[in-house]
Each structure stands twice: as C-alpha cells, then as structure tokens.
Image 1 (cartoon, rainbow, N blue to C red):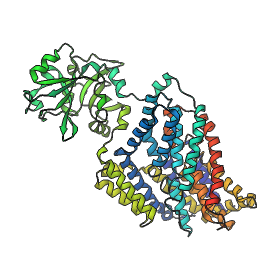
Image 2: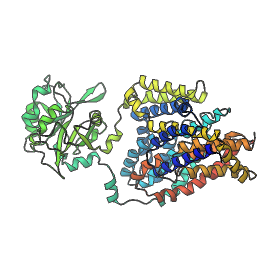
Image 3: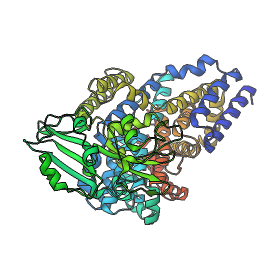
Image 4: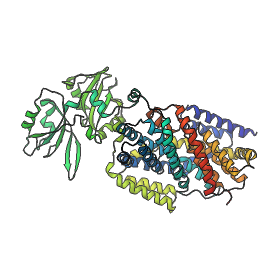
Length: 611
C-alpha cells in the first residue's frame, strides 16, 4: 500500500474514531483534518480550503436562513395546531398526521430545525391527548430523517452527492428526483410505526415530571400567583385617562404592578409593555399583579374608574403567545446584589416586573416583596413580554436564566409575516424545480425576500446559519479528493466489485446501502456521504453502469440513521421521549431492513442500471 494512501487512511480512521466518541466536537474534528491533510502532501492547503467556495455550502447556509424564517413566522406551529385539531385524542390519527406533516415540512427546511420546532408541539399534543410522548417522539424523528429523501435540498448529504455527480461530468439530480423514493418510504414507515409504537415504553409520571421544563402553570403554582391576577378595563370617565403611568405611581400607592397594557388597534388587540411614559386610553385593559390580599379591590376599581373583568386564575397564561414568566438567578458579579427589588426594577429591565422570589429552596412571601434586599444566588421570577425576555439571553453577567418555560419555544417573533414566508418559500421551490437559475441563487433570493418581508432580520439570519454543520462538511470534503488522488477510491471499488461484482445488481446496491448505514452508526450522515459517494461512483464506472442509481442508494442510506441516537435528529428526541439506545435498535433495525428492501427494489426500477 502506498505510503501516502496509508497516511490518508490513518487520518480517516482517526476522524471516524473521534466522531464515534464525540470528542472533540464534530466541527473541531473536521478542522483538525482540514489542517492536517495538507501535511501528507496529497493535497495542497488551497485544495483543502476549496470547500468554502463550494456553492453547495452557500446553498446549505441559505436554507438554514429560510428554515429559521419559517419557524419565526409560525408556519410550522400552524401545522402543529392543525394536527391538534384534526387528530383529536386518536393516537393513531395523530401519529399519521404528525409523520406526514414533519416529512413534508422537512423536505424544504432543515430536518433538525423541524424536530426542534415540533418537540414542544408534540409535548403539548401528548399532554392534551393523554398519549405518552415516547409514542410520538420517535415516529416524528424518523419522519424527519425520511424527509431527507424527499427533495434535493432536504438534507446536506443530497447536495454533497449531487455536487460529486456534477464534478465527475454528469448531470446532477433535479429538485424532485428524490420524491418518488421518499414519499413511498414515508408512507411505509408511517404504517410500520403504527405497529411498532406498542414497543415504545411509556415512562412513569415521576419520570415525565423530572425531565420536562416547567410550563407557565407550573410557575404560577410554585409561586402562588393565581389569586394575584386582576384585569381592569379603563372606563370613559376614569381619572387615569391622559396621565402617565409614572405620574400615577400605582405601585407605591396601592401595590399594583401593571404587567402589560392590552389595547385595541382596529380589529386586533396589541399588548404594550408597562412604561412610566405610557398614557392610558379608554378601553385599555390593564393586566395587574396585586400581592396584597388585604386591599378592597372593588372599592379601588370604583375610585379609579375601571371595570373589574373576570380572572382566569392562571395568571395571564391565556396570553402565553405574548406574555411570559421566567426564573433568573443573581450571580455574584451582578450589580443588583445589595439592592432592593424596587431599586433593581428601576435600574434593570424596565419592561419586566419581579413577581416572585426564592431564597434557597422555598418561595418567599410575596407581600412587601419590593422591599426585599437581593443577595447573590437569589432566584427571581420575572413577568413581561416574551420579546423582552428574549433579550435577557444576550448578557448573563447581570441575570442568569434558570428556567425558560416550555411556552418560550412557542413564541413567534414574526407571526404576522407568515403569509410572506410561505409566498417566499413557494418562489424558491418554483425556481429550483424549474431550474431557471441555479439552486444556490434561488435560495439566496429567498433569503433576501425573507429579509425584505421582515420575516427575519439580518442578525437572526446570521445566527440561524449552523456554522458547526458547515465547518464539518467543508473539513471532511478534502478526504474525497485525497482518497481519489492516492488510489484509495479505486482500491475500495475494485475490492467491492471483486467480492460481489458478478452478483445480482440488486445485491451490489444492497451492499452499498448496508455499508452506508453501518458507517452512519459512527459518523454523521454528511461525512458519511462525503466518504462513500466517490466509492459508489467508482463502482458504477467499474461495472460500466449508470451512476445515478448508485448515487441515489447512498443518498437514501445516508438518511436512514434510524438505529443510532448520535444522529442530531435522534439526539433531540432522546431526552424528550426518555429513550434508551436499545429503543433505537429495537425499533430502528427492522425499519432499516424494510427501507433497504424498498430502496433496492425501487432504485433500479426508476433509475435503470444500464440505460
């Protein structure tokens, strides 16, 4: 074996080993390989860095932006709400609708992003319907994996494989080339999960309570807030009209903290943050926290010319799309330490109100809370608009976020822009499907339109690009060139053809599928595709066959990561579904064999081996 090939194979084995133990992070492994490979003399540093100029890398980044814009505008949430309405309490109907929705949505969004969006939706569906989350989480994850088999842009391996086809001088796949395979596989997997879900254990109630983040109701109960909620509508002759809230000083005079102001604007109602400069208008509804139960509220309502509205008893959680609660802790370096709660509110987030406090384990008596002196380690419960709470995440030197309620994941920063997001998505899909312009150009146009329509801002767009994934792809791409240049690809192809070259063509495809799946147990699917597509194309050339069925079988297998929890998608649901590794093997192995059989039967039928 040539020394240069031996060095490349040793580096490849080292990379696979680090991927398998997940130390260091996958992007760091890729960077190490990117820096180390040129030392072998097989490729130059410029060739190692060539991946950064690859249009597919730009395309993947652009699709991250488009996917995040769809999430921010609530397109996926709307689908989730539709599932709740249509599925009712029928477990089989919910499972079918969930898998179909995730599979279709994941075909135009990052499948990992779709799962992240749907985890809280599934938890909510499970809570309302009484179904164990474990019986829905794994089917959802599998549908997200299969969504990678639906379109060209559905997952990174498809783009990597398509690029390799074009690099070798053949035409690439079309946008919908994957759909005839992915759609039947999704339907078959859905039928399989209807049967296999009975093998998924339901965790105990104690396990469920332990693993879940708190929701707003949990926080309301923990701090006994239910009886402190008041809703007051300002009447036409109220003495509050036309006066600034700071001037009224209601907090110090009667202990009433105005959380937000609900104001009618046309046919809609807007929630405005409480502010000293806010001026009340007729019809405004004040959401008020009153922690002194000795006050005669009805008498105060008459004095201030406001109407008492019915209370929900859930402390404004019916406004959870806009108003939220969050627990924060004071670190030692916080400037709030040594200040009273009143002073901290004055110099801190003016739009957030302290409504609860815990010292050590128990919640303190809420009366006279504003006079409490804050200590390092104290936990405060804040209430206010979600958009204000989101800003707390930017700087944890003053306040450390402890518990973001489940409802935080359902907050939609740009909910009103959903029609524009759908319109933009349709434009992008049309441009890609008709091939009027290159796919990367269509995706970049989509990004610009999402920004123009204010579905996403530039800062959020940059944050949505998963650099970890892009670096991992770029860092592993040089291996394909290095193995090709040292003869490693031809050697692997010759060995495979020598072993089974005279066999039934379907057996060769099945072997490629199995090798791809087995390697995928140790490395992420994109790196898997980078390593195996050159070998698959070399096998096709050795057999003088069409490259398309061999490329397609590797693409389908790269998305069939059903047996391993190291897949990013499966990792997201492992905790939420309280799964063990054995659960993925028990459920995933039969499904993998079924999909391998379906793929091996369909690929040479729709993409003939010898055209």
